[in-house]
Structure formats: C-alpha cells, structure tokens
Length: 259
Image 1 (cartoon, rainbow, N blue to C red):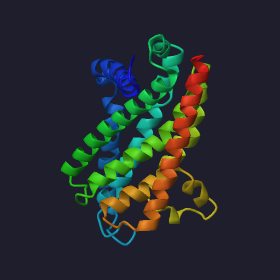
Image 2 (cartoon, rainbow, N blue to C red; image 1 turned 135 degrees about the vertical axis):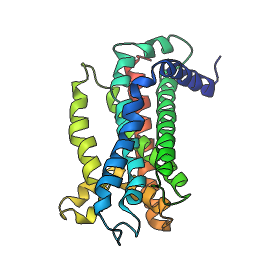
Image 3 (cartoon, rainbow, N blue to C red; image 1 turned 90 degrees about the vertical axis):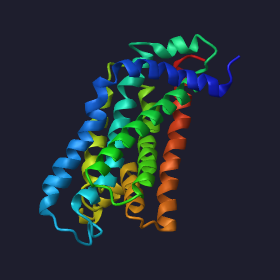
Image 4 (cartoon, rainbow, N blue to C red; image 1 turned 180 degrees about the horizontal axis):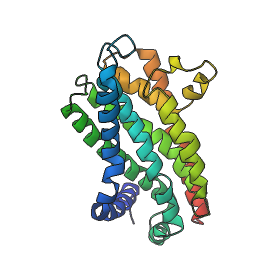
C-alpha cells in the first residue's frame, strides 16, 4: 500500500523521467525567452529611460527584473497547465495508467501540481541566476522575489489545471486563455510600467490578476520595500487562488477518471 506522499512522488518521478529526455524542447520557451525580453527591453529600451521615482531609483533593467520573474512564471505555468494536462487524459492517457495502480486521481492531481511547482522553481532559478550575472538584480532580495514568483505561477496554474481537466476536445479551448488572459495580463498587470499609468477604468482588471499581486511582491522583495499589510494582502490573494484551484483540480480529476 502506497503512502500518499509516495504516490505523489511517483507521479512526479514519471514526469521527470519524460522531461529529462525532452528538456531541450522547452529550454527556449521557459528560460531563454524571458532572458531575451530582459536584454531587449531592460538593457535595450531601458538605456533610454532615466532612473527615477517610478523605477525606485534603479535602472530600468533592475526595475524590470523582478517583474519578469513573476511574468515568466505565469507564462510557463500556462504552458505546463494546458496541453500537457489534456494529453494526460486524451492523447498519452498517462493518467489512466497511473490510476490503474494504487495511485488515486486526487494523488495524480496533486502530483501534477507538485511537478509544475518543480518546473516553475527550476526555470525561475535559472532565469534569476542569468539576470543576476547580467547585473539586473538589485541585491539579495531577488531570492525572496524568486519564491514569490513561483507562488504567482502556481496561483495561475492551479485554476488552469482544474479548467484543463474539463476540456474534452483538441485543445481549442486553450486559445482564449492565451489570447485574452496570458497576453493582456503580461502587458497590463504592471510588468513593464506601474498600473497607475493605466486609465482608471482599466486598473480594476489589473487588480484581479495574480500577476499584478505577484509583481508587487517580487518588486517589494527585490527593492527591500516590504510593508506588512500590502504584503499580507497579496499573499492571501495568491494563496487563495492556489487553494481553490487545487480543490477544483482534485474534484475534476476524480470525476473524469471515474473514481
């Protein structure tokens, strides 16, 4: 009889076995893309932006770095939480194989989320190291920024995994997610400029996105400007998304796997 943590680790191990043979296919999208954005916008466009109050007195590359950590985590979470989930149910049907063993659907769901957590942590760590080497880190606070960035990615991933577990077709339902959630969130949730520069009517849309809360946390940690109540508020919002998304994911996995 498997213990619950053993079952979840076996799910993670199965995904690691596949990933270590195919990691090259995702290296560009998960690690190099955010580095290219940081170099192009942070050092390229940023060379024309003078440090000021908006950038907390830092260069634009340093201002951009913690937000890019959170943004990259969200984009990687979107990739890991859509087609791979549908594949597990429909194409590779690996989930069905797992539940033919003593592993339960709930353990498959939580093991999948644990694997996504590992993937986000790995890609964010590599990006943080490269950004630090390039001189875009303000100080040791970037380590705490990394933790907040991974939490932001999971706050977007957990509800998306729950949604992906309900998709029956060929994945066309994911197109609106990328077009109308991921892309606008990346552009308008404070990654490249403060949302105070947005029209007042648009700001509430930024407030409800996990990326805005993550960006506020990663910048507060990187610039060591952490204030108790705002930090607690942002953390509570992100943790609530993780909890609700995880609950719904487990529920949909149980329903779809027929146990």
